[in-house]
Image (cartoon, rainbow, N blue to C red; front, side, top):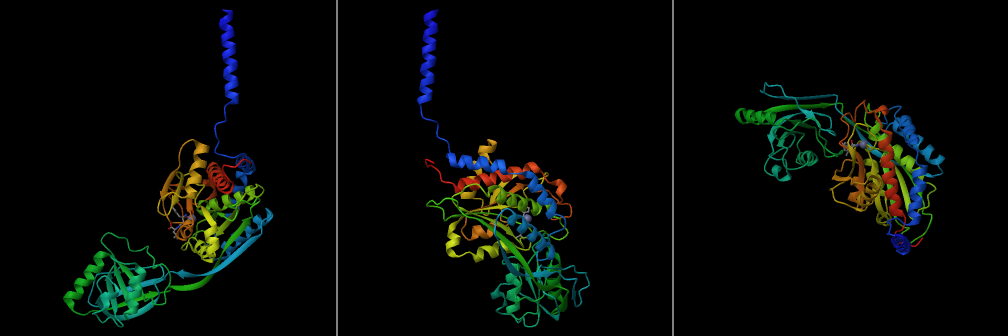
Length: 442
Ligand code: BES
Ligand code: ZN
């Protein structure tokens, strides 16, 4: 009995000794990274994010208006309070006002027509013969005389912008674009203003075909196109840029990690989720990371004019020198990151393929949640201009989104603090992963 006990004690001692001497399992985080993440998590305060959303949603932050500027002033003040110097990057853009009335009448054609305008359709009053121009390609005008006439084309092969430009270049005074069967006609855009534009209206497939039949049976027919009240105003918006310089120099300290969100909203929408949520998280990340020692530059960006075509992010990217473009190695875009009624956190890249941002974020997500995050594709926000410029970028969004986004119901009472905190942790931890060196002995 005694000897059995002794054997047991010796075995126990031996195994304890063995495990004490064996090398530690390698951890993926260096002590410095681990400490940085701990410091950052301790500093994060979801109440700050929530208060910023309350402040930002007092009124809609409509692009290019005083209310968008007011939001920019609030953000600037906050960032300056945290010790940042804020660069306000202003830019001009063309703000389109939709027509107040549209009319299309055709000689001898008695059915009522319900045309739609495109975003960026120009105003005008045109009387002229209607002329068929096939698919509206440049070559379709080679053998027809469109001068001063109203062209009618099928929308099948090229962008609406091209269709209107081609007709304008061929001398047409207005254009009717009829859609493929079953396509809605009333929510399309010509992209942006072009001096070659002529008044343009969209027609359903059935209306377009009926009109062509009428032209075939009745010979040349005249029509009248009237678009009233649309015009382009010059407006101004602004991006805000706050830099955190590297605290330590390493071989990669010249690289830039960018974290951004758009702060404008659409008409009549308080935009609590779209996108006071992303704005508030980026603001809190700027505060919480302020004193965490990092090895690379972190740029906190707040974009204006996203809702009218990603204009702020496009402008920012266009101002980057070739060298700064190269230095920008990762861009985290936060858009719609707080709705209690949206789905799970998802990460989207323009083409759905993984990159430096999705890799760092997947790792952070797995470490925090023990399972993987979904990576999808989508280009509907400010990561797109970055990705197009060759900068690894991704959108962080809870997906699918709540159905009332872009409406007056996008209010602060539907924001989840848990979701805000979760995305803040994932993005902050991933950014730290990317700024701090791996495999060092520090
Ligand atoms: N936050 C939205 C983008 C979004 C909404 C992505 C729902 C995924 C699901 C963004 O502010 C927006 O509205 N973008 C525009 C496109 C942009 C090019 C004007 C959109 O999606 O209509
Ligand atoms: Zn948005």
